[in-house]
Every structure is written in C-alpha cells, then in structure tokens.
Amino acid sequence: MARTILVVDDESVVRETIKKILEEEGFFVLSAEDGKSALEIHRVHAIDIALLDLKLPDITGAEVLERMKLVNPAIEAVIMTAFEMEDLVNRAFACGAYACLHKPFAIKALLEVFEQLERRNG
Image 1 (tube, rainbow, N blue to C red):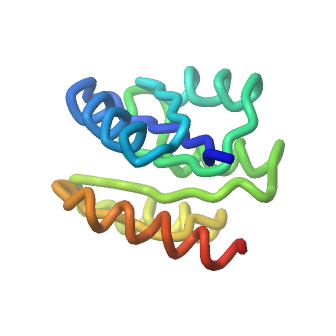
Image 2: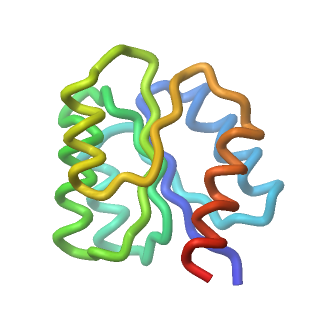
C-alpha cells in the first residue's frame, strides 16, 4: 500500500514539483499551501508522513507538527527550510521531526530520508 504524504509549502512551484515527483515514486500525495490548510487535510485524511516547510504564511511548520502530533502521535515528519531558523528547527525536532532538509535539496536526499523511515518503521 502506498504511503500517504502531505507536502506543505507556500511556494506553489516547490509544492507541485515535489508532489509530482513523489507521485511518480508511487506515493499518494496531498498538498497544502499553509498551516491551516495542512491541519484541515490532516483532520480528514490519514497522513503517514508530513513534509513541512518551516516558514509558512500563517503558522510555522513546527506548530503544524505539534498540532498534528496531538491528533496522531505516530505521524512522521520531515521539515524543510531555506532559512537559518535554528529555534524552529529545534522545536520541530523536539516535536518528533525525523529530519531537516535545507532548500534547495536534491530529490534523491528526500527519497533517502523516506527510505530510512520505511526501514525504521518496518
């Protein structure tokens, strides 16, 4: 069964590019442009992995992860950022983020992180 991934990024080009590539890799991918939309999608759909941009227009990716974990403690998360935001990165890791990718990143690096999550979770 394909894993369900939620890609959250306010940059449509980034969000749609990642979505397309992950779909080609066999994942079922949903996407959101901000934290509020991400939380609504998470409320309705069973998300296995959240790929969260830290800097969103409404709330931070770390806060989105905190709220998602309250509903589903087993959700996996990978954060991404183009900025040096050490406090938010640390907050996201404290909430259970598995990895942080710094933009721009190679899709190969993202897929390797997902493979590590698969091995870790069996």
